[in-house]
Image (cartoon, rainbow, N blue to C red; front, side):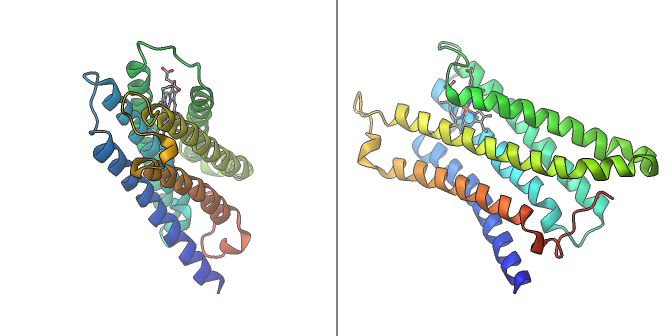
Length: 235
Ligand code: HEM
């Protein structure tokens, strides 16, 4: 019964992860005209949206779930997949951040609640990556001497991973809200967010799906009865 529920929740989480990325791409391409670099501010912002959702939600979410999905493989392989997904996430987030800062050149930088939470999230994410990389990969060179330290660090690493994922969700939701208010302002023949147009619906479904992912992934990682099917150890 527990195994069935676990399999079902993992499947739903994976469907949501791919669904969120797909819906974001659909929104950007169908309503936003795609992405660009410097030639078009609006399309450069589109790049920010897709790279941030791709990096912080899709790749970060997959990295968090790696130990649950690949529980059959040797731990070192899972660890490499976990780290590789984080490298993809951090690369995507870095380019996404540069895109937003450049696109925002003619406006004020770092004034919004979104940018404040975003900067805090990026800072904590970078720190978590650095500490995790050094502690769980580099320190493997003296495996026996550092085993106790790594075992002690693991619960903090897992908790901070989930906290950062929650902060990334808050950043995405404030970003989506800000974009919806701006692009669907109802002024100059623009659609009005209040009319709940097709695009507004896509943005709302995207936001709710990201939120549901946060609940589901936290539940999957924190639920002790699932640990039998995917054991979290440091080796
Ligand atoms: C976790 C993911 C995200 C992070 C860490 C993040 C971070 C940031 C940062 C630091 C800025 C400030 C750039 C500047 O002031 O020059 C910014 C700007 C912006 N972002 Fe994001 N962002 C994320 C996701 C999103 C998403 C999903 C959207 C909308 C779909 C979005 C929409 C915007 C908009 C409209 C701006 C320009 C206005 C402002 O500075 O608030 N962001 N973002």
